[in-house]
Length: 117
Image (cartoon, rainbow, N blue to C red; front, side):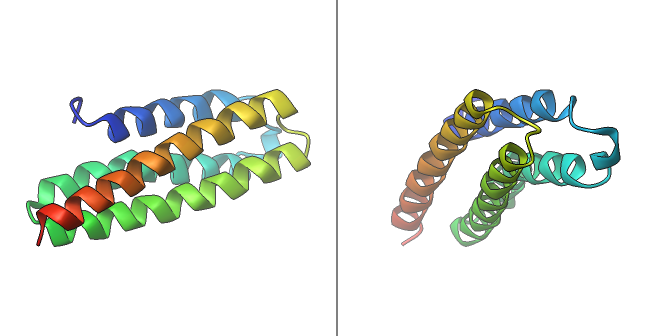
C-alpha cells in the first residue's frame, strides 16, 4: 500500500489523531477518544481491504466506506474543539489533513470508476 498516496495520507491522519487524543480527558477513553481512533483507523483499513478484493466494484464500495468514516471523523474533530479538548490550531491542522484525504479519496473513486468500465 506504500505506493498509494491516499493510503499514506490516511495513515498520517490516523497517527495525528492518536497523538491528538492521547491528552483527552480520561473519562473520554471509551467515548470520543475511542470513536475518533476507530474512525481514523477505518479509513486506511478500508482502502487496503478494498484494494485487496481485486475488483473495481468492491474497491469502490470500500472507498465509499472509508469516505463515510472520514466524514464521521471530521465531525468528531469539530466536536473535540467545541469541547475544548483541542485548540483552534490543532483543529485546523486536523481538518486540513482530513480534507486532503477526502480530495484524494474522491479522485481515486473517479479513477476506479473509469478503469472499471
